[in-house]
View (cartoon, rainbow, N blue to C red):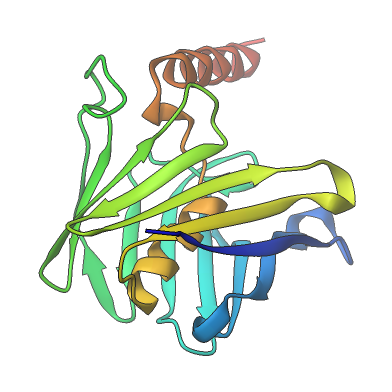
Length: 192
């Protein structure tokens, strides 16, 4: 089966104060129409929100503890439309499959996992559908590319897209170690 491939271009809005800057990806994804990922769409103290909106996709948002410009998986909350979705992951697992983020949306079980040691390659998987996400390029040529395998619907694509605006380094062991060290060094600055 040939995958359908869609690409979204990176965008930035650096107008105003730096706390109001917004970043993301936008473009057209075939029959799903226009899609826009925004991070941080909103800020609530130490929490940031990444959000997806589009012509034919449901509004999906991910709220988590701020890590740079993106929300992190730490105490993350996912919403599809007005429905809150429970997230589960085993942060102590040794394999990428074991560290996958698990969720149930509209009665379907999903796993979002790292497909390589690099933090740019991810996949959203449910029974019969896989959406492989890859972020690549530098500067104004940054892109997020989605390779869709199977009969994906708008919810599948929106879930994969919102995760491009989330810091998912903790889905690999190496990324979890780097995130821990960065947080530890940040805490040390407080005591100086």
